[in-house]
Length: 187
Length: 187
DNA sequence: TAAATTTTGTGACTTTTGACACAGGTTTGT
DNA sequence: ACAAACCTGTGTCAAAAGTCACAAAATTTA
Image 1 (cartoon, rainbow over the protein chains, first blue to last red):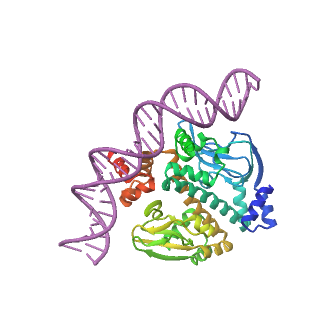
Image 2 (cartoon, each protein chain N blue to C red):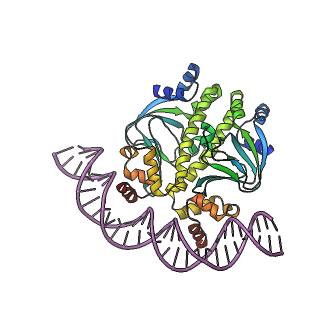
Image 3 (cartoon, helix red, strand yellow):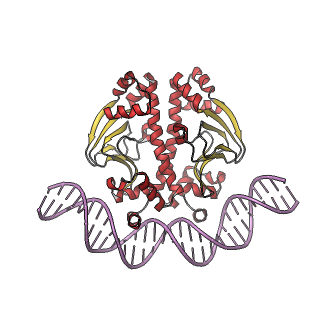
């Protein structure tokens, strides 16, 4: 749990009591490669803090996985819509390699909110950070051409393609695999 | 202010005290068509609840406005990144027609959070709703073709084009104006 | 470690979308 | 009410990206 505590302390004030209260919401889990953290049709009841490894969120389009997000170390993975509206998730999340996470239980977290203002602030900041990342990625589709989108990704995450295969990156950028392969060849 | 109160009451429990506390954060404002709610380079210090009219968020790309979001009645307009990290906004927001809003002051809202748990829950839900909308729009770029993206928009918001011009809708969908005009002609 | 599976690169061709140009409408503001 | 600004439709052409096919490389797994 130490990785999460460290993370929280860098972003807000957090008392020993708050930490203890938050601890009741947490559990450590480990997923093997390709193991699901959230399945389509299930209601998302967790926020996962990635300690090691990484995960992806994806949509099933005619049998093909279209990747909507990747979550790396020190990031939070969840499906906001399903989590906050208790609706069935249209997206799945799975581990892309052996991944250790700290699972934050939604129900317990909501209880903790009522007891600790610091925890609710933390919860809000988690959402804000997930959202900011999403906003940037979303806008890149309107502002950039496919090639620029690729260049932008590489400049922000230089080792992205070392961890994520070209095939998977392609659907994330909304580009065909072949076109992405050619982009890479050019530069 | 009644429109906001009504809105809040449909989404959460809200006591008379919370409402009074929240009221200190609010002010009613009116913007003329094309008047800015947020300028590029300014730090966003507000969340705007749209009472009537509508606004858009846009990015300036070589002098052209690329629209990243539209906000209609009963929705909240803000730039999350600038708002939450107190950074300079890369996006501007302006009224697309004469628009009445309730401005929620960020600083005062943060103070109110410390006093009322109900208000903090409200704040969290506002972000969640903005985020869910954004997530859907973002994913539509990965899942759909330009044509499908257009069809999808029209099926969700049948009167979108009655309010937003084709030219403005085009950049929002990441499609050229001409192509969008042809999509519309087909169906 | 060998076989099976997945991933990647590349060529040839097709489809889609964009860019430019221009004419006709519509809205806005003075 | 008139001019200016803006919006829309449409034709032609060019560019970008997608699709299909297949071989080579890398990775996984039995």
